[in-house]
Length: 574
Image 1 (cartoon, rainbow, N blue to C red):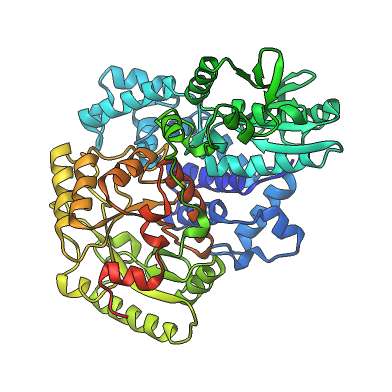
Image 2 (cartoon, one colour):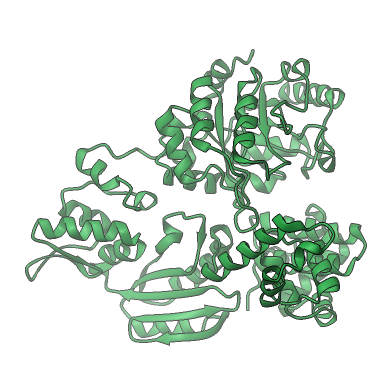
């Protein structure tokens, strides 16, 4: 079965977790975590690189030993080290790591001190008040753990869209190669660019439905065939991801694509609109009485209702139908509209590549400028830059800019917002930079009032350009901090400061609703990659999808401006 980069990253992350629970060497643990990150960000499948004879040791953080383990995973689907660690630890203990707020150190304490090995035992221990007695936990942590366990029990398993995309692409390619297949499209929440997906919905038009179903149910990555009919099927991949297939005729493809893309709320509203016009709309087409009047394309479905085409990202029944009726649908921003990226790191702090490598990669992405915004020195774990190192980096940027044609590196920093809202670098240092991103990297649990005031004070700082990843969330790992985002967004609009849409798939922060709030408040959004390697610049595509869900047009996005206009807006001297 094909092994995807997500599988390799998950294996290395699992090894790191298990080693940390065992109390292994921190440097060994960090090596596996860095390797996991490398493969989660890699834009080319490792198996394809190996097949082409590529040397994996040229990848950041990958030495001979780790490269050998990647080869083992690709060739066998297993990793001997991971198999051994799983035998040495209780099989269910790693399930505890999926509970938000429980890292390997806490899991180790729960296991050794309370004998907690399963999520059920964890819930019982929290309900009985035994966790609060452990060193480093307390009543508040115990309550948060219990709430997280209950929330997980109520929530359907979902994975990041960026991870699902790896499995989706291979399966689409396999079905597209079946003779007689005309079209293959991923529908559902995946097509609407939702942050996470619970399953995949796959739509195919083909002349030989039986051949499609055979290929679907015998696909290399299938763990279980849940159902297989003439035109409908459902499989469970070995990754745990469920895929539902529907095969339709070409004449119904547009109607089916609309139906299976959703959302349910949007589809219900469209059907009701059709009923008012004497039309019946379903996955087979648009009908007036017994006559089929549309359905070959999605555009024809909307046209039959007197509407322009509504992009998938807008289909949430949040006013898009009314805007379409009035002729005021937004002209959504596209990846090609981005002229630059205002958030990137190098190996001068916690990035993996040099200034020159990041510049070349940005140019390859079609960008005309890139802001280098390494971390400030306050965040010790990231080898942050102090005033002297920032000055030295600025000089290196000046030298590089002298060698470019049609491309510019901007000088910047990602500076920590301290607990009281002050910044971790002096005004003297910040005044010399082109771009200053102010971000929260600590004290996530402040009360709502204090957290809000903290961000408002940072936005008042005259040298702040952008508020970085404004809610602080990590999807599936850390909830957003408690903050009055409406006040923060309004403040940014009033002050003329800008809000980041951080495109890292784990963040996608701002979320879609906050993007729309920013649009309405007149606060421009900057779609940034937060690249920590040359590979991460591809994150911009995910950020654009989120921006489109938030109704953002080109004019609402700061970094769609050419460099000259950007410099005018930021007050940067050429």
